[in-house]
Image (cartoon, rainbow, N blue to C red; front, side, top):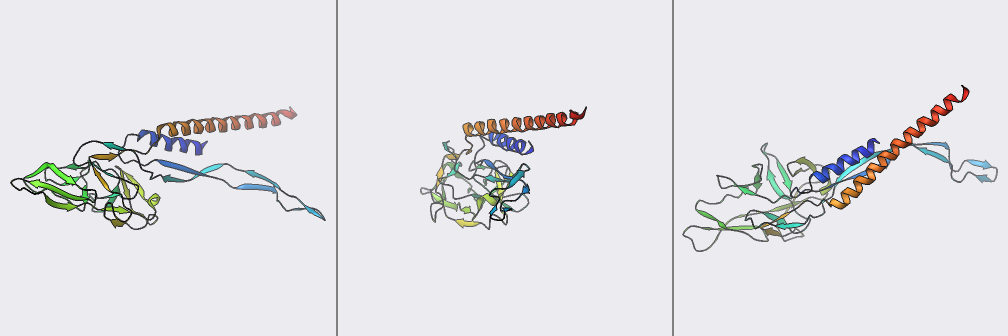
Length: 254
C-alpha cells in the first residue's frame, strides 16, 4: 500500500505539471522485496530425484527508483522573440543561479529585464550571458537555428551580432537532479556537461518563437492512476482478508 501511495504521488506531480513549460515526467520503477524459502529448489527428494521448483514466499514491493523521462514534449508557437525551443531531445540551456552555481533547463521561455539582460522568469541569467546594446530594437531580435543572436541598433542598416547561445548535454540525463523552477543540477551520476553548438554534433537546433511544452500524456497518467488506485484497494482488501482469517483461527478453540 505504501508503494502504491508513492506511485499515486508521482502521478499527481506529473498531472499537476501538464502545462509546465519544459517539464519532464517521472516514472516509478518498483522491485520485489526479500523472499522466504521454506523449501529450496534442488533439494534431494529421493536418492535419484530432487525437488524441481521449491517453495518461496515474497514479502511485498518497494520503489526502487524514480526516473525522469526526457522524451521531447510538443512544440507550441508563441511568436515571442525570446521564446526558444530545442528541436530534439539533445540539449539544455545553461542558467546561472543566484548562489553562483549553474543549472540546466529545457524551458526556453526567456525574458528581458531593465538592464537588457536575457534571463528566466525567476531572474536567473542565461549562460553565456547576452545583453542587448543600448538603442537596440527588440522587435528585430533574431536567433538563428545555430544560436547566433543578432539585433538591429538604431541608425544602423545591418543587424549586429550580440552573442551566441550554446547548448549542453550529459552522458546520463536521467542522473540529473531536479531542483524545482524547471531546473536540473549536474550530479556524479549525470556526468559532466558536454557543451555544443545548436544544430551541430547531434544537438538540436533552436526554434525562435516556440516553446517546448510538458511531455506528460494526460490519458496515460489517468490510466496509471486508476491502476495504482485499484492496486491500493486490492492490497487493503488482502490485509482485511488476512486479518479475518487470523481471527477465525484464533477463535477455533472457543
